[in-house]
View 1 (cartoon, rainbow, N blue to C red):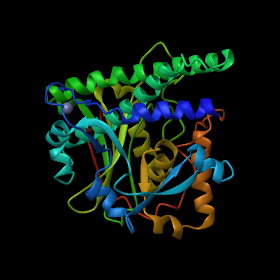
View 2 (tube, helix red, strand yellow; view 1 turned 30 degrees about the vertical axis):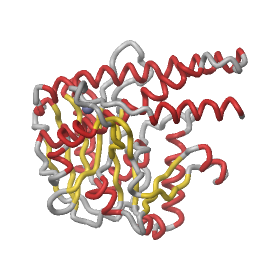
View 3 (cartoon, rainbow, N blue to C red; view 1 turned 45 degrees about the horizontal axis):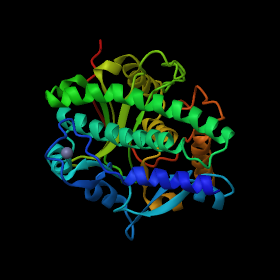
View 4 (tube, protein in one colour; view 1 turned 180 degrees about the vertical axis):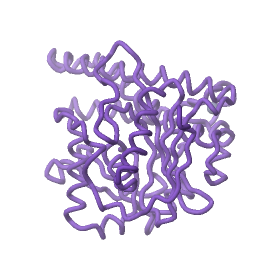
Length: 342
Ligand SMILES: [Zn+2]
């Protein structure tokens, strides 16, 4: 256990090692802050009750206390979703159009939300790769442990390289203010807002169960999509956004959602299914969860457990089926950059 404790300490050291990931980082980055990947007052504050929200987690301490199953954990809303990935100057300056104004949505705002999703993932992936790299040389490791960590480092290092590839496209587009290089699909709702999230995904299967790309292909770059909830002037929204360099899989993913809905599938079921299958960076309203039927709560938790299990194969229809009738909100409008021919 000493080795495990040492490794978690190394991880914590890297997580607290703040750095600015802004595309123009440099001399001005003199004060790293604890930035919110989900907005504090406009989003987390909207669903907090008595200062707290829930997040389903599969962290070791939670698994140990819950019969090795993921479980919701109460966390203070001011601490939820923070990461030390921007300096105060760049965070304030870059994200003004989304932190101070509701989503219209316009292309600049959507690109900024997407950038924040991508940077949080970059920060996390870099931390894991660095922690493993530093830890491999720990003299207390046995040969077998060392081999295991080296293999793990190779995998995480590759994951980080995949993200570096996409960050270059995002950085260049934001630097030149070429926001139209981002495509998006935004679904809006006026129903009560219970769930907040921001995340990223290499899409593998679409909303109809069709295959999109082989995540085991290590020779070519993978298409990459971001997603997030955001406040509107009236109501709230759920957006899928990607850079044009990932059009191949991401246009197909977005189109499959439209096709599923036109064939009678419920868009709110699809979004809830997507959220709990693909996003660990989420928060939801405590009384919403507590008021769900036991079967609904169990269905959500077993979906999270399935997706978190590295040994369980991902079912090809994981975005097409499951978690129906739980969402309790209605999708009203859709905004998209997709055209009939794109
Ligand atoms: Zn900075």
